[in-house]
Length: 120
Image (tube, rainbow, N blue to C red; front, side, top):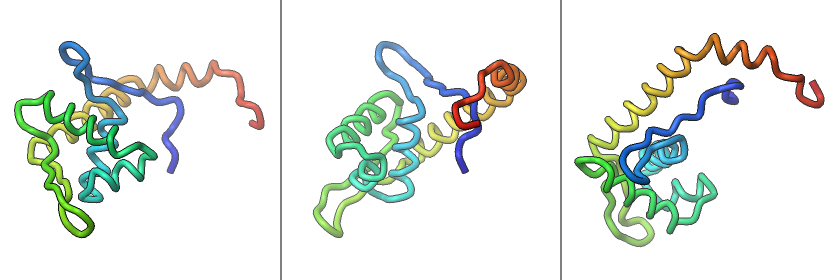
């Protein structure tokens, strides 16, 4: 099912350039589902290097790492969310849901003022 439109796109920003937003949350979800940073990167059409860089950044933002990984080749290694990673992802998704509920009336109002898209 497609995301309902309009919807909020939230980024939780900390000090400096540290933040978590939809892309990082999706990467965490895909790592949890696939057990692999490489597989998560492929699913998101992202380079492995970029995904690894994001994983390292996420691990550096919080008091505990969010992603645990082990090196290996084919059939070896992998990645998983740590307990803190599971908690951070759940908290981010809860923030998104609460903000969406709080903004639902205003989002509907904005939508009612929008011109129809071509083809509607």
